[in-house]
Amino acid sequence: MFFDSLLKNQKNIVKLIDQSIKNNRLFHAYIFDGEDKVSIEKAYLYFASKLLCEQEYAPCEVCANCDRVLNNAHTNVIRIQPEKDVIRKEQIAQIIHELSMTSVETGAKIYIIEDAEKLNKAAANALLKLLEEPYPNHYIILTTQNASRIIDTIASRCELIHFIPINKYAIETSLLQAGVDKDFAYVLSNISNSVEEANKYIEEGNVIDIYEFVQSLYRSMNLGKDLLIDYALKGKVLFKEENLHPIFFNIMLLFIKEKIKYLSNLKRNKKNDSSIHFVEYFSNLKKDYEIKDLIHVLDVINKYDERLYARVNMELLYVSLFTEL
Ligand SMILES: [Zn+2]
Image (cartoon, rainbow, N blue to C red; front, side):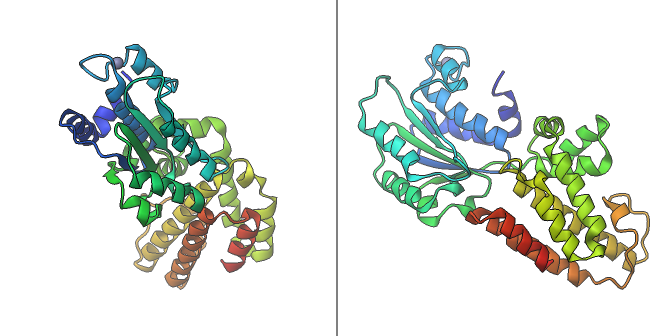
């Protein structure tokens, strides 16, 4: 059944929703926070179908209302997603409009704002007004992978719910069993929220392109910065989709963290540590190579990773990043 994996992976969340509904103690606004995007989506659909289901044992998953909720066709469930990576005031106005209308349908209304850290300032202000004057039987659920990015004035008016992090090790093991290369399985397990998502990345091919791009960056690192910058700009691989930028940063960070591990092993004369990845790119490192330089690089990449969310020109950001490395 649709909610099986949610019941298995996020038992406590389901229990919380069930009990809050049973005891009539729902909040008007929630933040669903966590990396497990698949479970978060299922959880808000669970919340909505539980409230709208026609059966006593809800959600039954088969009545007309459940069916419409699960197929994104119920008019009482309104989902707002970032457009070009930002949520604008006009999108929040859609909620305000719905609130002012007398509903054709009976029952609760559920508004879902996905990736709520992407609300721009005007949208956040409009939302804030809604949160300050809640309507009975109307619920707002914000989702995010990082609740600390949601502005305090909004976060403080919502009930914050943390989802259990995904077990990356389980994803990696499953990919290895399917015959995926050791280093690539490690990369995929770090950027995916489920085995299904990892397999989707393999099929689409964009992540493999980025992984190979990072590998060529590593090969060229010793050849000087000009080449590096050139690589970054010609590397159209990064510009195929918006969501590839954070994946690129993530893979860069993985490489540097492994390099630090490799180097500290080298200094302790510990060899053949099979838990370290991408070893072939580090094997010409000398013992006197400084770990503190790598920690500096780590800081630089983290700093740029933060700036990703500030809607900058990506091409300029990459030029500036590679100049600073
Ligand atoms: Zn139902």
